[in-house]
Each structure stands twice: as structure tokens, then as C-alpha cells.
Length: 631
Image 1 (cartoon, rainbow, N blue to C red):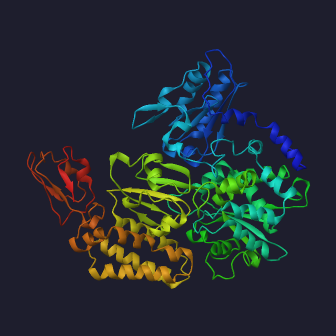
Image 2 (image 1 turned 180 degrees about the horizontal axis):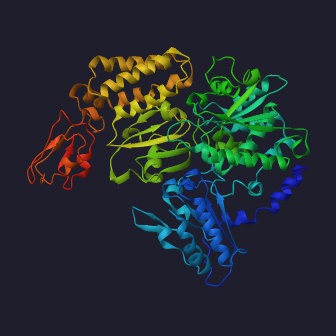
Image 3 (image 1 turned 90 degrees about the vertical axis):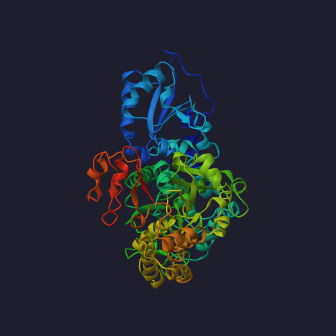
């Protein structure tokens, strides 16, 4: 694509480029073509990391081959798109304008889709989503419960455009926000729009974005920087990765807008090296934007210049904290520094620096195009807009969901997430990753916003949401997160470096059946002390999983300490396998036991030697009559 020399030229290109996208966005179901009737169609194949790992690239290749073989090359296009969000049902293929949504597609299904759907006009029924509660097949994406309550702003282009084709981004109003800003708005104008919109940082802290930009603008310097924090480190979180894979140009555009607003000409995307697909698509997008004159010198013929480079992170969780991130970008060890000075005054190379995470930036172009009033009308009084969550754990519909702030946990878990797997009972949901807390059933009707989650001992965080059922041990959950924190702590301050290590040792002692009442008292006291004295946000919130589980599941801690049992049957040292009278004496358990601790004659009741048993569970798994119980 040639260089675009002015804002008017960009708008002209946009007006001429939306044919295929309009075809894909038609929501009313079209009548399928009868056999032999030619009809223009577009097949969108999920190209996110999850679906790619399940061979969606091979699905695309097979579809393209079958389309050619059927003589449909002039009428049908098949191409990759970003993550549709419904990861539980991937790989996904969507056919437009028929608005048919195929799930769990395999490479071998390509021939049937082309033969039946494209040539005969017959929907491939077996590839449609089936709603479990009513056993009904659903064709339309918007009719699926998973999507009904979602409002996609940050994810607006994921699943719609080809992320490797800048023309498709431009066709979806891409770079029009940047054109509007640099062609006729002042720095104060754009900062006011972002401030009035109520957008807050989506990286965890929730600091008002407009206020952060205004602080960076205040300080005079010969150079300023915009940094995109794409160092997504929470276990189970993949919101930022999906945006970068499915809509990379939105981040480039937002960074340029931020650069104009504060007076910066250089941007840096700090991204995990473990995100190769996101990195690849970012590099493609940056190259295309430079070629079109949308990055670099004198953008759209104005005197505004802005360019972006990519910096790899090494996967350190602490580098999600902005001062530690800046240290890493500079080539130093990623450790947080004392504030003040804040990065807005003295950040990268001691210059004014604005750090925003991926999801925060993804909202910017939409806010500029549609206005502050539109965005602030969504959400709650103090938490505006939408939030993307990575819904995972013991939930039927695993995936990415974007909902208005104020949506309740119950709506996300049951209406969107489809409830708990295998009909099990809900126990808790962890929000905010290692820095968050565990929320119990009594708080399921809590509206999701920064203040409400904080009031019940958790936090928004970057958007991880892990659902747990009755088979999860809350002592073990707290231990899991503490293991992560201890591993990821930079070690700069004593409360985090030493305190969390001691917390983990006490949790291990309790889960091993050696805990005492004094340990419970010390656990709570030490967790509170770390919260009050650690240097950075990582340390200050690191004890949240311990404090929240002790508050809401104290009975489980007491069972581990006083009764030496694990109610959920998870902590290995507290388990006891025993054989009931249902034993038929088949000897299978004895043959499976790796330490030979099971004895008994054929057709007689067998017995487990508890002193030798290593609690591996092989006997219970292999018993044909379920005669072995765990308690």
C-alpha cells in the first residue's frame, strides 16, 4: 500500500475499503444460496494462539485449497482473523454474510464446509454450537449466551479483521482517530476527551488515564516517551496477547495519539518474548504503518512525527510495575524504584514517560471517534467503560469476555461462562491474579468495578478470573499463588523477599499436616505486615490470596491444623485412601500400586498399608468398581 499523504486521502481510502467488512458485519441472517447459485462470502478463521495450536492454520489452508478446487475463488475469500474469545469451542470458522458460526472445527472439516455450505447452501449442523441447557443448535454468534451480555470495545476488531492487513484496519475507521487528533486538535483537547471519558488504567491499579497523560504533558523535556506495557504476567491471563494478535494497529494508533498528547515522538512496546505470534503481527503492523506514512516522520503530511520500537521482556512478573519495566527497557535488572519521582516526571532515560497497558490503549481510538460522553455512559459511576476478563478454571465456557463495568460476577460465571463444569458446586473465584483475592458465593452479585472488588478483599487486576469448585483446596490455592510470588519477586525489599518466603513455608507446613494454632496467628500477622511495608504494588498485594482465603475459608485452615485433614482431598500428606466392602478382590489395585502397599487374596477384600502409601491415587483411578475412597 502506498504512502498516505493527508488526512483527506486517508478518509477517501477508508470509504473505498469497507466492502468486505460490511459483508462480515451483517448481523441479519441471509438466505443461503441454493446449489449452483454464486454468492460472495467471507470465511473468517480464528488465528489466535489457542486456535493456532489446534491447527487453525491448517484449517485455513485446507479451506483455501477446497475453494479453488470448487471454482469459487472469485466469490469466496478465506482468511485469518483474531481471537473470537470463545476459546472453549475453538478452532472457530465464521461464514459471512450467512452469519453462521462453526465451532470445534478440524482440518478435515474444510471439504464438507465448502461442499455443503458454499456449494449446496446447507449448514453443516454438526459443527454448530449446541447450548447444553436446552440441547439446541445455535447458528448466530450473537445468539449464543457467551456473547449476549458482552460489549466489545477493546476487542471490537478481534474476530472481524485480518490483523495482518492494514487495509482492513483502515476500513474499520482505522487511523481516523489519529488523523482527527493531529489535523485539528490541541494536546489539551485530546487529554480532556480521555479525562472526561473516565477511562482508567486496565493494568491493575486503575489510575485515571487522562490524569496520567496530563502529568506527562506538564513537564518540559527535549524528549518524551510512550511505553505500552504488554508484559502480561498473571497466571491464566491472555487479554493483552489476544488484542495484539487480533488488532495490533489499534495499539499503534493509540500510542501515536498518546505521543501527540504529551509531546512524545518515540514509543516502545515492552512485550513478553513468550508471545511470538503477537510479536510477529506487531512487526508486520509496524512495517505496514511506516510504509503508509502512519508512523515515522511527518505523519499524514503534518509536522507530527512518531515511531515505535519493540523491546522484549524476559517474563518477569515484577516488570508489570511501571518503574521496574522502565529499568528493564534501559537494560538494567527489572526492579521497582521509589516514587516520587513518578515516570511522568522522570521515567525512561530520566525523561517524562507515560506507561499504559495494552487494553487501556485499545480503548483510545474508539473514544476519540465516538466521544467521551459515549464511553462514560457505559459502566458505573466510578468505573467507566468495559473490562476484558480471561475466564478460566472450573468453568464450562473458557475464554475472553468483555463486559460493561458493573456486570456482576454471577452474570459472568453463569450467564456468560455457562456455570461450573460437570455440575459441580461453585466455591470461589479468584480475580486479579496473584495480587487478587478469592471471592465466595455470598459475593456473586457484587458488581465488577475497582471499588467493589477492593471492598471484598480482591481487585480488578489485569483481568484474570479463575473459577474454582468444591474440589479445590483453598490452602493449596493460597500456596500456589505464594509459590508464584516468591519465584517472581525481584528481591529488592525485605518484606517481599523474606516475608513471602516465610509465608510460603508456613503454608507448606499447614498443607503437610504439621501446622499449629501459632502458625495461623503468625500467618495472618505476617501477611498484614507485608501488605503495609512492601516497596511496590507486587509486594503490597502479594498477601491478598492468603488474607482472603483465611478470611472466607478459615474452617479449611483449621481442618488442616486441628483435624489434620484436607476437606477438598487435595493436600497429599493429609489424604488417606481406603478400600471399602465393595471390593471384589480383582487384584487390579495391587498390580497398579507403585510401592506395593496393597495386599489381599483374589476375590477377597484388599487392604492398604497406610505407612507405605504415597497417596498417588493410582489404585482409585484403576478400580473397576469404585471401591476405593479418598478422604
